[in-house]
Image (cartoon, rainbow, N blue to C red):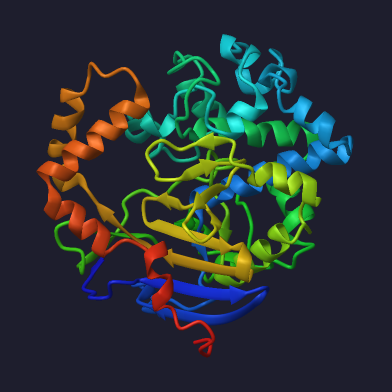
Length: 401
């Protein structure tokens, strides 16, 4: 289905001070088939924002078992095999050697060296479009791949690592990750529109009552950012989208989460400080550091916390400003389709084939692409979600839409 649309924002922006929403702006359509507009209660797939929930769950389950910050820090240096031994079903009788050396801390900080499954062509070509894939399908896709670097020596964003962390939480809690999230976080915080589905896609879930407000995902040609919008061909399968992404939520619920997390209601303050600590510099982002599922950005005036989430058809960007206890959220159910420039992207990748360092390769790729295709970069910037530089434009304190 396609639909003409000239909204630059198709989604929602919300601002809260403490747990009170003080501003919201919604624009565009959540479901073109039903002509349903985006509202403040529209549900979105929050993608990698899920990682902070997974990190918090791991810290919580470990600390609940042994409430000692010193011991928690030691425990995070344990190898993955300590929690997922060779006989664990996840390995399908073949545990990779790196499971004996990669630690929980390295998985949390994206320094494990494990290949990121979304960087593998077989994921997009074979597994992603498959109906009802399993976590074993996903594991078999990346577990035999060699490490990109020696664990602990580099930073490289890795969805595979958070998939594994979700499985560790399940082993420790003796519950599914979905159950643990609901019982430990969602229900106590009254996040009534939030859940981690374990099967299906956003499209199939819409038929069920808890997801009746779920937005469909759309895309646009990057060279025609105001439309028409086309519904994405394949939605992300929730069977494999667990610890690294997959939570469905709303602006109201994420305000509740942020308020509870940063005020020490999710984790004791010393454990929260460990989660938010600047563990690893993110080379490609200025003054940004990865904690555990959270990014801290050091601005001239203060440090803020964030972590974006993006999958085909959905993108969101939350910000928390400690000095004013302010949460800023942005959501969209329209993402750009870059297939029309795929040949340009591949040409640059081919040119950099001999660059072995992943961080250096990413840096050079961005430099070359920006120099050769400034028009595409400009369009992406103009139609991307709300950025930190836009904070001053917000009318904080104005009525909620």
